[in-house]
Amino acid sequence: MKIIAMIPARYSASRFPGKLMQDLGGKPVITRTYQATVSTSLFDDVIVVTDSQIIFDEIQNIGGHVMMSKKPHECGSDRIAEAVENLDVDVVVNVQGDEPFTEVDSLKKLIQVFKEDTQHQIDLASLMVHITDQDEIKNPNTVKVVIDNNNVALYFSRSPIPYPRDESVDVKYYKHKGVYAFRKQALMDFYHLPMLTLEAAEKLEQLRYLEYGKRIKMVETTVEGVEIDTPEDLERANKLWK
Image (cartoon, rainbow, N blue to C red; front, top):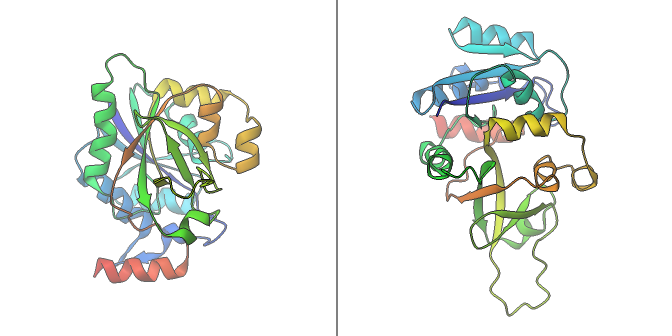
């Protein structure tokens, strides 16, 4: 299998514009993420795909592989799909540009899903973390996932799922981490299929895959990582880096 990592990198993030070019230990966040992904040695290629000339120039200047998006996109899957449409690859791993602390073991587990799936029954793999804090479970910014007994996703929601009508039942809650590995065909199907109502209502792109019958294998990890969504996150990341 040919496996590549794609790092979608949008400059104008709504909560923290320009965050990917902010300084993290002497280099921009996107550069740290790119170099950390390359250093895992898990991929045949690592490519940043961006809508920003600033980010494009930064990655090119360090000798990295970068592509410019040809048109605007609503989500990372669309941006990646456009970039890989004409590439000869089997599996594409989406690494978030704002997660410079790339966690190797979790990425290995995602890739292993496809190495073991010889019957090609799985279309995507993604990460989840067990959570117990009630505020986090109820927080609509924390995306929850419910799974079947084979760890295949049944649904994703911003609401607490499952709803604990019987509080005596020992229910486990899982937070979805937005790191994906796709079979290329699943990604292309997503790109060419229209948004349906569940995705539109929850504003969660992964629901499009479920609405069209794709199977998403969830892999549990205990590593939360550091997503840089705010200036406070960046400050915390710099402390960790030191």
